[in-house]
Length: 388
Length: 109
Image 1: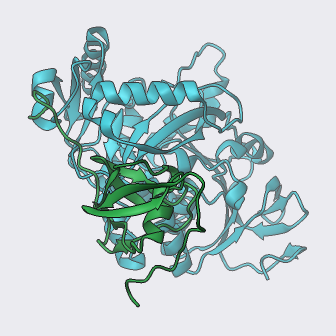
Image 2 (image 1 turned 180 degrees about the vertical axis):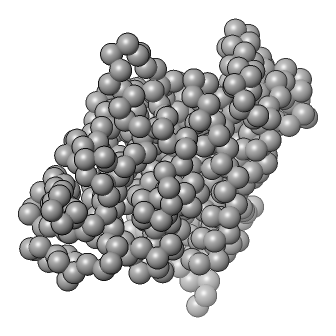
């Protein structure tokens, strides 16, 4: 049995081990399983620093990839593929991942920020981005966002965007994994991964000594990738950034579009976010940040002053130094892959439909993945900023 | 039987009694207890309706966690009745469905 101690030698023709059962690991494992690969997931379970829990739920592109055109196209592809994933998961599992794509708004509180935004969005398209966007002043924004506060001076709109429910997406993916017969082994903390060059196989070793053998290995362990990737010839210098978010009671619908500051879910709650804090591995909350988020939300939509907050929580984003993902197969240990991204919702469908077959060895490495190699962080002349 | 309460409050209370109303009907209850306790002892079975399915709901945890006991108190919607002490003259109504934010003048589209 998969969960007992000792080496597991049962292996199908193409056995894949995915380390990490969050939004990335689950999407890739599902994409691999539906392509015919035999997959197991090794997941920390409830003790994991689950970035999926802190995801704000935006399905987003405009403003992303200002310094990396390949990431603009990759994000656009994610938005294009999303409806297919939503329908497939709904049909297979009956779980609604909550996708709505009415378009999305970025809101600015400062004239300079709004001007800088327009310049950045223009540059993305000068570089070939082809991302539809529209700058709007407050009066125009109010036609779409009734009740917008005077503190908002302007913003931008992109018709491709929307939102989903990160928690329901994770639940839908896990239900889909079960439906496809994927082994989900929970409560294991993988400390070590080894490659046997002679047989071309991998072993994942848990802290308690349990071992799992496979001939493909996908590291989707979030912050854990930083220490696991170098063991199979890969690089993933991931660091945590804390995001705190708030959620209100369920309210009658008043906000038809998601914004970068707040969004109303299908269920009626309004999610307010988020902070970006460098506090190491502390995923707690703090009164000063909760107050700041609440104040900003009321400035954005004064009517939110009437709403009651029901929860606040923190989660850690697994960020690369430049904020862009790492997707790479190891050259020294072929069959080992590292995948790191903090956009587990926006890119969920791409992770499923593109990375699933790719990590299974069924498709060539997509051309744009040259930009997503971990070695870019070794360039001594480069400096990085991740936008957080 | 359906109108009998499952709950009772030990008498007598040294703090005396207050009168509150639930859906306009007066209830005499011991002072100092929570609104939720007072309504349960008064035989109220449905405090609110589910935002999702519309079904009837009543207090579950009685300690501020489950949000099942929401009622409107003196015009303020969605209050956690298990955390709020009764006061003389309090007007309490069921919380039906989700709260609707009230746009003020100049805020509507």
